[in-house]
Image (cartoon, rainbow, N blue to C red; front, side):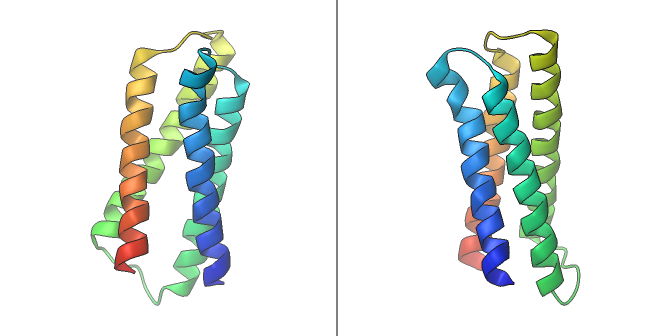
Amino acid sequence: MLMYAVSAVSDALLCYSIGIFAGPVRQRFGLLPVVFIFLGVAFDLLGTFLMSLLSPGFAVDLHTVIGMIALVMMIILAVWSLVEYRRGFREKSIRRRGYALIAWLTWAAVFVLGAVGR
């Protein structure tokens, strides 16, 4: 089961990265980044669930606390991105881009903490 959990979290990293960094490459905010951010959330939730099954109990440590904060940040980003896309804001939103970068950096830090510390 560990292999599936690690695979899901790695897929989340890939999807988040594509979703967040595809915008500047394309110069427009389209549906593709939104889809990849939502896919990242889905893989993240799956990986978190699978890892929770492997854990003997709920540990309140740095990885868990920052991980939950990062997951909530990504859910907020996914919803925010969908709302902006549905409202027709196709140009880059500076506030959303800044928040996306902070959320990605937070999530990536948790990913590294989990890979190194677990």
